[in-house]
Length: 248
Image 1 (cartoon, one colour):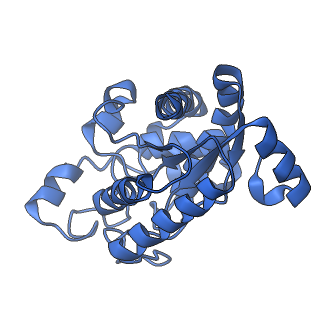
Image 2: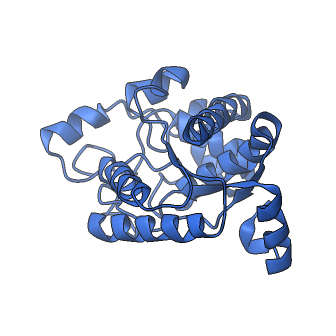
């Protein structure tokens, strides 16, 4: 159920019966020559779409998917066409204010569902949620797969940190929007085994400086719909758990 697709009387009725807002957060940035710029948004939205029935089943509340956050901090992909980045401070202020406005609508809780893995973006979400909690009219949650609690539940490539547009993200897009994956290109891509977190810690400023001339790390050729579906199950459980704990 997408909030933006509802009429206002329909939204009012759903809020009266009890609803949780799920806010997909991604980015608009290069994801290799085979995945769309909207990859992170697609993954976040699909996670929310699949999580909504689980929220109903486990929490007894409607899961309502908000319009996604598509512009945020995404400096590492900056050298590649189509990547649009905004300052961290802008992201913090915007996310905080949206959370407060959504909470004012009467949702029982709001869960930010993240799929963009850039550290400054993740820190911006954390800071925004913390800032909004002080005055929000409902509990707020942040479901971020990079949190230490969730990393061990996800794929081997994800845990390695070499996972920008590789097997992990390619599998998730294949399971959600296969028509947007350039399959002839994907299956021919060689693995790029670069220590992405290590390069970040060493001070590399962008993907090209890290050795990713085509804006991907990992092994996109090994991706599959089966892996994508299995990973979404883990991400859905993350969303439900974080929302349940916020409500408690």
